[in-house]
Image (cartoon, rainbow, N blue to C red; front, side, top):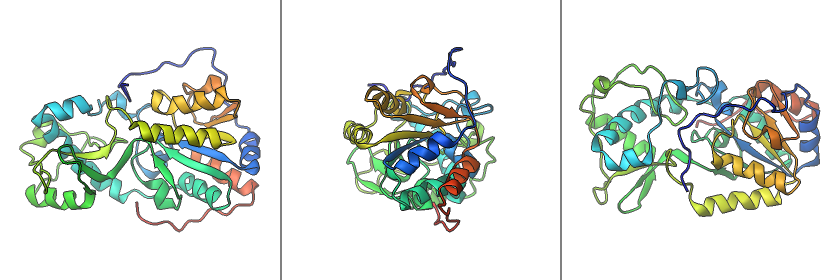
Length: 300
């Protein structure tokens, strides 16, 4: 199955309008068993842009595809130069009020699980446990030849040593950690091979055009089956990787609630879509439920 296609989506004119009524979300959380599905919109308040909102990065940037990455040494040089620069920004990002609220809901036993489409690790940094990273994580690297997995920080040190003085100014940073650089800025950036077999290294994330591992998808389907309701946070649900879980929940009669300022592809399946900023919305819900949101978080 082709995953995460780089296509746009135009909202249907007959989609239900967004609301500002938080009561359905508060009621669902009070009942417990809520499965959270989060997208890039949850991390925008941490300084990481999303793809599809106004000014989002798809308007200026085409994400790297798996096919291009594996086929072209130049594409890999371009990717690793941009990702190396973007990694510095991701390393400085901290969980925002939305991430901290989700962690607080989890600590109070209101959640059955968290699935995130994000690769930034901010849910875990906020204190959420058992997070399923649907698209993987930028803090790991995998060899396409021998399959060895290693921490990103080790590769980052090797890239720093091999590219002394590489300090271009990026036009922007994208949700996949890929900075916007020109070919001139990339220059002759040196790419590092696997230290075990000399093979091609790839971040342990699902690229556009790549399939989410089937066992991960089935695990998420199981979480949907076990959940009482599904709460979507900051995802346009444009691609099937997230939308399929919304459709699954709706087919089995589980309430789907969405908090996203813009219309989503899943609105027709939702009990409600709350068109408000995520951080303030989730902290307001936490206040209604008398749940403190902890400001003490660890680094991502």
